[in-house]
Amino acid sequence: MVMVEKITTTDVKRLNKNRIFRLIHYADKISRQEIADVLQLSLPTVNQNLKVLTGQDLIIFSGNFESTGGRKAQVISVNGDARYAVSVNISDSGIRVSLVNLKGEIVCSVKSTTAFSTDDSYGKMVAAFVADVIKRYHIVESSVCGVGITVPGIFDVANEMIVSAPTMSVRNYPIERITRFIPYPCRAMNDARANAYAEFWYDRKTGGGGVVADEKNYCSTSQDGKIYIMLNTGVGGCYIDNEQIRTGRNNRYGEFGHMTLHPNGCKCLCGKNGCFEAYVSSRKLSVDLDVSLEEFFCQLKGGNEQYAVIFDKYLDDLTTGINNLYIMSDASIVLGGPVARHLVPYKDRIIDLLVKKYAFDTDASYFSFANCTSEQSDAGAALTFLGDFIRNI
Image (cartoon, rainbow, N blue to C red; front, side, top):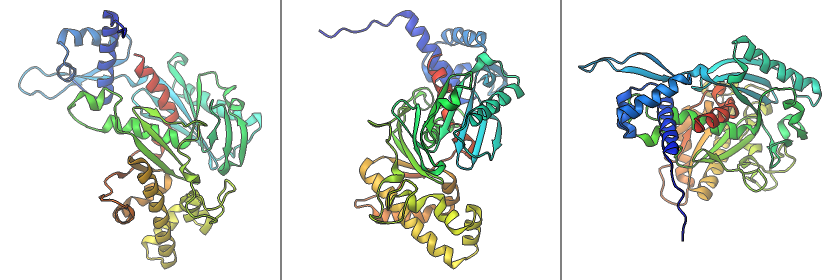
């Protein structure tokens, strides 16, 4: 006999409050009647929960919608100042610390070109940056959900040790060397996974725009699974489905940059030969040519024949890797990172190559570019704290 867990009145009330808050959060602006219509709840139930959420300082009433013939409906929005999270993005080019509010808005960012160091002084510097952005905006400490730290490297299963970060020349580095100086809950993530979570977060918030059409898009965590590929000085990836990031047995799922593209090919920073990363990282179009990415694409657009040949080879290798991942996963693939932002004008060429390389019928509609800004992508680990908070309202 299967035992069915009984749902109590308290459970129903908690669920309704959470659904209502989620809808307000992902719709950005909404009216009472829209909430009732989308969630199929009575107006008294909606009003009761709005009163509770207002009392918790989680929502605000900000003016009125334009009249459609009757009384103007009040605009209901999330109070972005109710909670915050801090993003610490560490890379070979320096560090960026950002403050993110409950609405996912980047309140401020502080950058430094200070190189990574295993000395305690580095951890103290990171903590000072975190303290500075919180103090600068007079944030109450109790409203800080946590600090998300992203690193372009592979972590151990517990996410406590950076096992390897080739672009930073780091191995077996305990992240506690940084977090012990930060007086808030901390969470460390691979940067590609953080970028993927950010894309998931902002895509869901902007997926419909305007008037809310259905609950599925705004209130549930349901989204089709997607593979994310990040093109930076390193190449990483992630698979995310239903707000869950697949990690794999050894917490290495998504290290697409180190799949073999050309056996015995170019040397990768990981020490192996022929890795996907060795052919499609930003280094291939910048460091290897002693130019910046911006300069490469500017000269490419200006008709530089040498760069045109290099770029043709780059797109061929990139689309071969994407095609391989699509064949294995049969999932949507999103391309992000600094290089991807320069590739958007060449989307038609990329799609044409993907269509030609796939063994079956396809129009390559599975492929798209990430929509996040650089700052938004870097905030992914911080957003996971806000996501946890929202799930538990």
